[in-house]
Length: 385
Image (tube, rainbow, N blue to C red; front, side):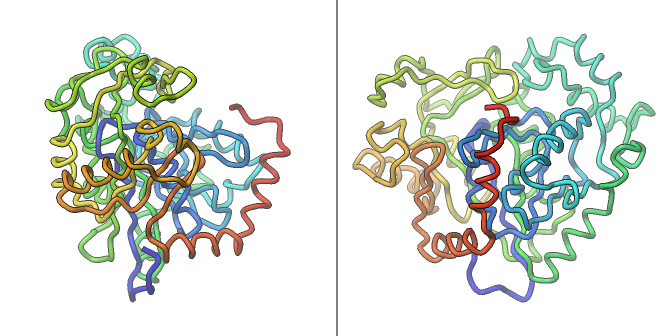
């Protein structure tokens, strides 16, 4: 990544290696300064959390690369669009950083209808598998099923007048940028443990969320370009609340009270899902899950998040203590020798062991004058925390 530009462009895939909520939004935000395009896949049941200035943003439809005011933003062909959520995000961000003129939506992407939402509201999917989609009544499962069955109830973006200003052939757009030598970032949703094909069926999402499947869903042939796959891994994996399926066979579900005790945190630690605000389930690390995810996703590097859960004294610092270093070594061994190149010790801190990349990102940050954007965010009072 960020080495001498090849004749063709580079595809940077940020992919979850566990059960979602690994911190993909934060890694995307960190890499954003180098990107010409940010591409979001999936649907609005995945909320990616990023921080700009002192504010917290949960992005469910727009790519987290929006923090780079010069990057183009793409919602690809394989996405499932919730128009209300999309326009809420556009309106929210337009007050601090223009996204309207750089947003591109594939004309053939599917749009969730009110009827599909109502049908999902009447289903028992949320109870049966702990689906966040069903719990929040987004209609994603129903819309996906209708798409597979090619029902007349399906609607595409080209049939929605309000989306017309953003429509284009994003497959052609993405590949044109890549053919010109640009860097793009493909922001994945959920994690391999939730993949329809490779996860713990039936406790899975409605699509395959592996790196290659996400690339195919937006029309990218990975074999044709230089590819970096950043596998995002949590120290303690989580699943959503309720009957959401098992953890790895070599891990153990624990309470948030127990995790707080292990971290040495002076305050109680607990996490809620970004979308439904339900208390997450948490477990110890699974080497077997990581080995499987590494075999399928083939990451070129790993971003380790929630390292402060191993030792709270490093929270939001650039320090690495012995427990973190030992965990890093274990992750590299379990993944088959993939380097842990990025470590997050808190929501706002990234330790990057790739000196060239980190120095280039700092230079790009200054060049793009991101500080001006952050100043606007700090001055605003309209954003929700």
